[in-house]
Amino acid sequence: MTNPVSSSVAVSIVVPVRNEENNISPLIAEIASALDGRWDHEIIYVNDGSTDGTAERLAGEMRARKNLRQLRHEKSSGQSAAVRSGVRAARGAIVATLDGDGQNNPAFLPDLISAIEQGGERVGLAAGQRVGRKDTGFKRFQSRTANRIRNMILHDGTRDTGCGLKAFRRDVFLSMPYFDGLHRFLPALVRREGFDIAYVDVIDRPRHSGVSNYGFFDRLWIGIMDLAGVWWLIRRKKPTPVATEVK
Image (cartoon, rainbow, N blue to C red; front, side, top):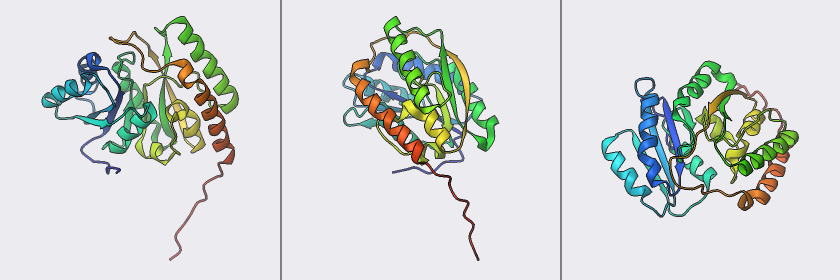
């Protein structure tokens, strides 16, 4: 079920999480610090089938913060599904996302949101691009390799699609075809819909606690198939005709 946009909420922050109980409270405090007094906003945590104390920690935070919401998947369905659930439930016309592990600094959210507002109808996505990454050397290598191959095939003009810090128009996101892995191809798909992209350099940092829930070899072959599928979608896109009503 898709909720209507509410005039009382300008921006919705969507945070997908799975087993991040120790990162919940610090990150919510940082999001609030970055946005309070600047935009009327809500924070939507999508609990993607966590088996630790994530749900309880969020419930405690919700008692203190009226603009905090929790959506819960009965079982883990992946990051793209969690982001989509959050966007569908969002009340703001602008949606911003960030990862729930603390590596994405919420201090950059205002820059992303402002880029969407200042871009007008022309800009559909503001994408964070990481500098000074704090991941392991192997993870940086796999990310560089994946980005190079993706850009060579899709020509999306983006050096880093893996950064969770993004802002976009809710209606633009919901107009795109959905598939598992969508979040890694947003720049190419937004361009496919005819919109421009704004880029914001963001500084990466170590996660607060815990370990990554996503592995390279778990998604390698799926990523290759997704890349082929997105290439096909772009090739099959035709210009949307201008329709006028005859009275």
